[in-house]
Picture (tube, one colour):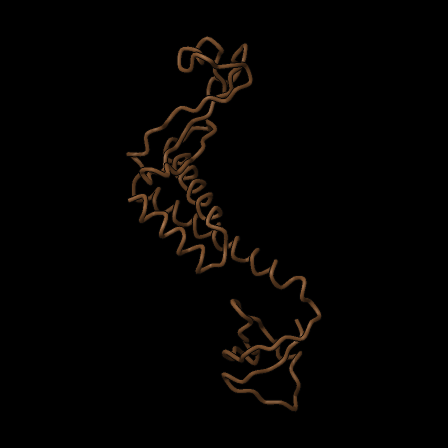
Length: 182
């Protein structure tokens, strides 16, 4: 199971050109969002992928304080020491939450969060690659036409050449190599 999960994470990160840690964090965030909706509480939750088993665990985090004002987010030093004997003030203690009850709706929500995070990371990766090349002339290939605009293939991504920025004297067809300014 674990090996399959990490192979999938690695494959997604290679396809999208993003760091595998971003995908791992996206999965952890997604399970936290789904758990927060399922448990309907405002406790601070953290998700963590167990690298040995491949399971995604959810933890409720409570801060150790002298006097508890918010029992959902804080725990007294005496209670903390009953759970963890060497607990100190201002330390955060994690309590594992059950994820067995998370159902189909939670899984769908987690899937949407993962897709959104991966899309954002992919967008940032493309921006980081091309923002330093603004004003440069590059070679690209005409991929398709959309409402008069030309969609070109720029390495791993696509670019859009609006109709107003095209020469009226030139005609292009799909697979033509052209030079454009970013």
